[in-house]
Length: 339
Length: 167
Image (cartoon, rainbow over all chains, first blue to last red; front, top):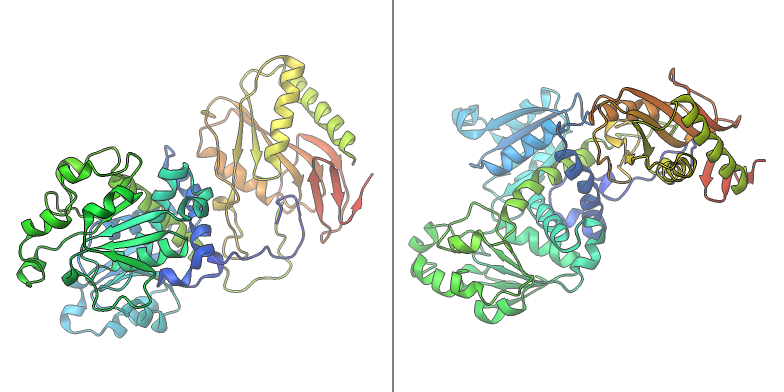
């Protein structure tokens, strides 16, 4: 609706604007992702100001409910909430009554009873955010559930690619149409990989997974991807190289002969970085194991956008919180739309 | 208003801005997204022709400052673009239609995040009445009495009221 058009009808709710929870990237679809990225542009501008704070969510309370260790995601969400003027509360399982044996359901119901508006959940088990959404009236945001999904990571990755490729997210569909993305590493144990495959494919990218067979899920039926075990063959064509974190335990679990063996076959070493296209982007969700999946020198090359991913993470999470919490419970008739 | 009427109103408002401020020193124009943005640019062009000096122009989106967040879907329509410090300037806020005054209230809040302007003035193409806040314009293209449920649209081709062009 044009801003000059002034009536009493409430404006249109965009697809992303009518979302109650953000549990999976699949909830958004291509249009929802594009909408989210468009709104993120505005929050990037807010983040660049001398005083990076707007009053949009005054009086709202956002709880981070973390059952797994996390620094960057929790801080990123809390920074985002504070920049929107929302109040924040932190719940970490290690210092709470979960230790005394409180069930997840009781924990969620207790927090909900305090009168909160959003719960940001991270849990080691897949599906927990869906369960939490059934027990609360608050908006639920999945900040990582087991090996399943991490939707805000996928959104910030899409935003970062759009920003690097087009300057702004406005042309996001054009940027992603036919974009060749290689996701390299421990796909089997990666929620980042699952959410990113969904998001990149929804936007029209061609995704190739590159990993040793032991680090791929047992079945890739239904995944919109191609698979390769040869990074050297994939690198020259890849416009985006997305490296996943290799957890050191994977070697002791006999999934890898050794970390050095992994680096030799699948690490983005300095030698291998010469195969990169001149315009390729190198991405990593963090925290990086320098010397394992990515060589220290490569992480610091200009084509690496790892720190930009972190910076954009705050703006993307502001967009997610704003779109979920600014959504009216029901439209009040007779409220003048503009003016 | 026809396109010519709008053009004449822009010229008159430009002269009024120069007259009231004794020139264009430290004047900056800020257009409200989205309707006020093209109007601010036209106004700056006209001011340049009158006085021969370039006036800084910015645009502001007030979505995050609105008081109806949670009552109706509120989404930013464009990215705010103010590339100069507002401290010490006289800001002329520009919008196409002044209605309840709530958008202008939000804009006044938003402006304070970009510096402390020496003064803020308000220029609108159409004042359609029905104010809900104590806000009045300094420069008006046309006072246009309307019903609350009517639509007012300001375009390059003129001002449209409902489906009829008001003259």
